[in-house]
Length: 519
Ligand SMILES: CC(=O)SCCNC(=O)CCNC(=O)[C@H](O)C(C)(C)COP(=O)(O)OP(=O)(O)OC[C@H]1O[C@@H](n2cnc3c(N)ncnc32)[C@H](O)[C@@H]1OP(=O)(O)O
Ligand SMILES: CC(C)C(=O)C(=O)O
Image (cartoon, rainbow, N blue to C red; front, side):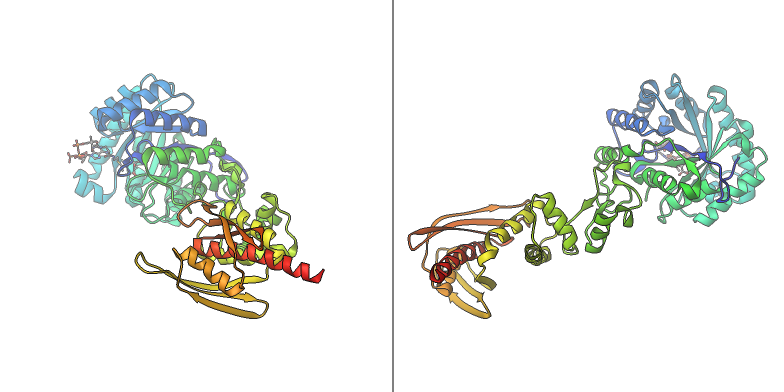
């Protein structure tokens, strides 16, 4: 068995054994029906996995049927069925698998002292005998037999070597070393695989496999340590689903092996561009959503919100990304605009939206953008467009600007609006207690401060963006001295959007009046 500890220069092929349909399905609530399993199995073939563990045929008629259907119809990967070291399990597994071009029976028996004493109530000799009997029965019908000493990571080293040697002699072609309860550590697991390679005399007759659980969040790290020590197969699941905290995540282990091939010096057959579609399919099929910050396939895995990172990404993507998003099936990097973003990302988005902003315009939009980002979790393109349009249409004559406002309103009382505006260096305030509602009251307050009596000809409010925290856009037309002026205002608060729209229009009037007096 060639060992790829760092000094080796040889590239080894690592088999990817996917157990989404068996161990993954053991996640509470993740059961899949026959059609769903077939769809996932097809996706696994597209992904390029070497082995699909399709189920545990003795578990139920449905599981049997799914393994049988997958064995009959899915081509391009070894199809595997799980069995206890029990005649009826092995026979049932073979019944489901036979007919597949590349069938595999996976026989398991726990070997650790805890499992022997409390669960199986068997001595070490009985375990060895039972393992031999199970593997022999499977090998009599199927050339490809995998044996797993369940809870191997907690099994006494000498006894583990004894069982593994016996299983290989009985015909096992793959020896899978499970860390069934996610207890081991990378250094310890590396040593365990190395020990088997060094001490089991016939180990070169079998491929060593690793099967790690994530109870301490180390399933991927432990699997990688196993590969580094010489394992040739990794057992894993899409999105890391599986018993309890789950299994080693396929997308993470594959991308770690690929991204750090300089270190591991191995390759896999996985078509990595299918990782995100596979993750989405399994998530929608099982109803188990993927957390946003999940490595490789999470929504945030290639999203950047911080200004310093976005600036780096715009200059050179490798500053903050070690994987190209397209390589795992994302369309592109996502530069999310939010409260941590800077001018570089805002200017870039403005350009993408078709606006060429001057330095001054960018600065003004940036200040309003930061105010908005403090109020809103996500800033959409519609928000940015609204901010820019407002700036472009109003920035030349921004004579009156909003400082603050306060609204008091109820179903039974007349609304009150306290408003403060700035003109030049001076602040002007008014409190009005009149109007049909807070928006009408806001109109009165603006009129009172600016001294402009206007007639509202048209007034519309609509949502400029999506979601509960969407920005409202107010557009209005007012008549002043026989002329009509338009105004636009955008805010998450419709009263504020109205005041801003009103000021937008009022400032046009003020600019015109000023120009006329200068002429
Ligand atoms: C680490 C793993 O992920 S192993 C796979 C775990 N997955 C599952 O268990 C899902 C499918 N399981 C099932 O549907 C059921 O447990 C069945 C059909 C397999 C068995 O059901 P039952 O016959 O009712 O047994 P039950 O589940 O209650 O207990 C398991 C029995 O298998 C025995 N057993 C456990 N592992 C093995 C093994 N590898 N080889 C032989 N016997 C075993 C247990 O000792 C126990 O036997 P006992 O009833 O004589 O004490
Ligand atoms: C059946 C074996 C491989 C298993 O799932 C485990 O030990 O976790």
